[in-house]
Image (cartoon, rainbow, N blue to C red; front, top):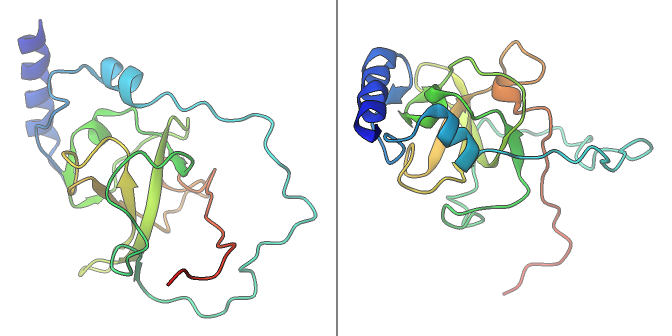
Length: 176
């Protein structure tokens, strides 16, 4: 049974290599249902805090750098479970076998997985991307990271990434 699953996944990876490269990885012996059951399953809080009456703390910022990588600034730790981060839909096989490149595959907006945004920028061909720390470990994707296309036409973002974004707030001075 596992070998049949692996063969089917291997065929899927071979057939689906488009813009983002897909390679066989540690999830090769899992069906997409097993992957979904094991590595997704985010339950959204339906009683969220209301932001009505509060302003976005960066609404007056006028300077936005063309690229930012918080890993290079030493603000990001290694790949690990980050807890509350940005939510995406990650249940598809394109996501399961992502290996490198800009992820542009179609996916839904049923948020089921958390990722941590670590930066943004533009590729050499002009594609705008979000750099994200993945929560399934460093043996997936680009050493635990995925580059996802940003500024897509869908107002919810690719895989719903713009639906439930959260960001840290620095509440204390730098410790030296």
